[in-house]
Image (cartoon, rainbow, N blue to C red; front, top):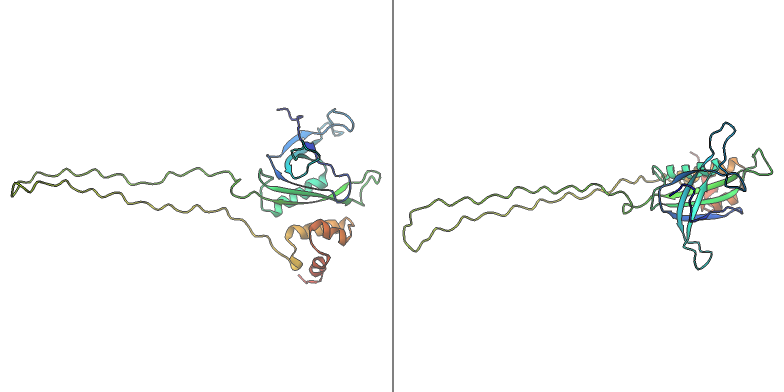
Length: 237
């Protein structure tokens, strides 16, 4: 399949607060960006191609009866890349993986943008790594079974009486070897700060405050209450 093929609808962040949530369908892939309004590949002034990351998501969104809910998230801006990277790090995961759940929200525009006519958008992201059912299965280990003992041939013994025929030797069945339980991968527990905020939420709180986003809007983006943020601010470290 060509890197320019995409049958899924693209995710759009047209208004502040727009959010997409979905299950990652496949490993992220790279594609060169195209020039605005055309299909011509785009390049930086030094000649390097402008690249973007494509993430295929299975969402609950349905635009019509034929909509299967598949969406493609085009990650081109550095702010979206940073938000997703922070979310992956907070989840203790190496990267976006099939079966994981990704949420991205458009928070607002960066007031410090160099081009006020086309300001950079600010994003927040959350990521949940896939459960063990989606993880790559470990190679099966063949159970250790002791070798079957061959029966010892009975030595002929002179019969004491005719009616006492020699009986065959009894062979003990091999003992079953208990299997060691499969250990589940260790999942680090996130640190919880005052007000119930996680490390990821604290990092996003500081980033959004630095961009001048009001606390009320930050609370909505982080999924917390203004009281939780106030508790975090009033608690000494």
